[in-house]
Structures are given as C-alpha cells and as structure tokens.
Image 1 (cartoon, rainbow, N blue to C red):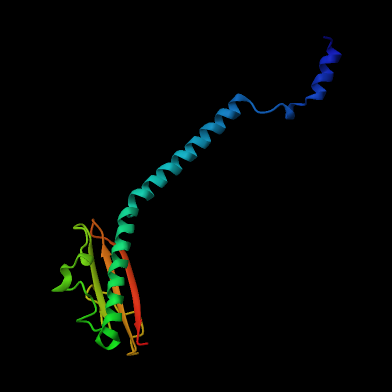
Image 2: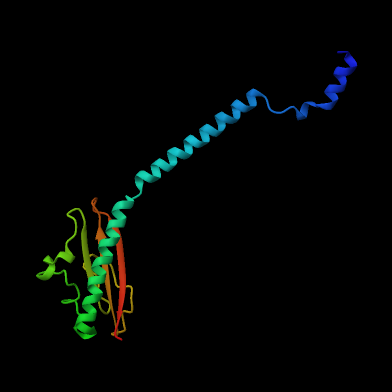
Length: 159
C-alpha cells in the first residue's frame, strides 16, 4: 500500500470514531464495581437493622385476630355492654380459649379508651375523647425481641 492510500483510510476513520481503549474499559469496570460494592454493603446494613418481615407479618395477624374478637364482642354485648371490663374476650378468666392463644415469643395486649383516658401500655387516646358515642380500642403485638411489630386502632360507634 502506498502512503496516499493509507492517508485516505485514516480520513475515513478519524481518531474520535475508533472506539474505547482497553484502559478506559478497565477503569469503567473498577468504578462500577466499587459503586456496586458500596450499594450492597448499604443494603445489607439496612436489612440487618430492619425488623424481620416474618415477625411483623405474624404480629400483624395476631393483632388483627384479637381485634376481630373484640369487635365481635361489641356486636354480642351491644354498645352499652361494651365496657372496659367486658371488651376483650381474651382477658382472664375466659382468656384460655383457643382463639386467644399466641405463640410464646409474642405478646398481644389490648386497651380500651373512653373519654380522655390513658392506655395501660402508656399511650394516650387519639379518638373522639369528648363524645360518649365513641369508644376506642387499641391492640398491640410485640415480637420475639420485645419490639412492637404491630399496632391497630379501632373506633367503635354507638349506631
């Protein structure tokens, strides 16, 4: 090939259109791997510090089950008979029923609000405190590590 033919080929493929070099490719791979490594470490830490999804799910099911029993008790007793002494069918002495049993690593407690009262596990009433046509119930489930995994509130109306 002559020099004039080589000059013509260079004109067809200028330097800016030749692609990327091996060094540029290696630098890209190193940068992306460092970024992905940091992302994986961050996600691992977040997953370890979050409550276990299984414990949260089971706690929510236990709290929902207790709340359904309480609301069924309201239907059975009517609004006037639905008081702090009778609202939870799982309270002693009837608490040994099969529907009230929970796994030994969980605890489910309930609380009854009327007026401006405070719940037995330290939370205040958030529903209609001045209206006597409303009563509020809160159910809290704690998980295997003693942390609150679910909390459900319900407002019972006099209808």
